[in-house]
Image (tube, rainbow, N blue to C red):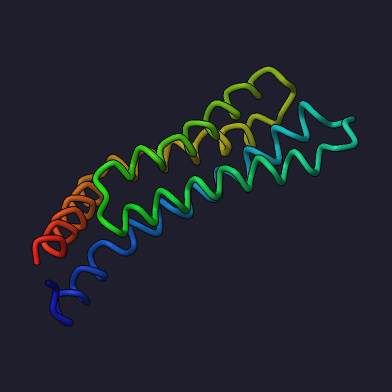
Length: 140
C-alpha cells in the first residue's frame, strides 16, 4: 500500500492530469449540448428538458467512469470515452448549420483535447498504477 509520502507524490504527479481530463469532458458536454440543442431544437417547447437530460446522462456516465478509474478497474476508460465521443459527434453535426466558426472550433476542440489527455503518457501511467493498487488490495 501507499504510505503518506507516497500518496502525496502520487497525487502531486497524477491528480492534475486526472482533473484535466474530467473537466475537459464536463466542459465539452456543457458547450456541445447547449449549442446542439439550441441549433436543432430551437422551436421545441421541451428543449430545456432534452438539454438537461442529455447533459445529465453524459455527466453520470463520465462520473461513473472516473469513479471506476479511481477504484482501479482496468476497463474504466471504456466507460469514460463515449462522453467526449458523443460531444465530438454533436459538434461535427453542427458543421454547416450556421454556427459561428470560432464557437464551432471551440466545441470541436474540447472533446479532442479530452481524448488527447486520456491518451497521454501520464494518464496511462496513472491508470496502470491504480490497477496495480487494486490488485495489491485484493491480494492482501
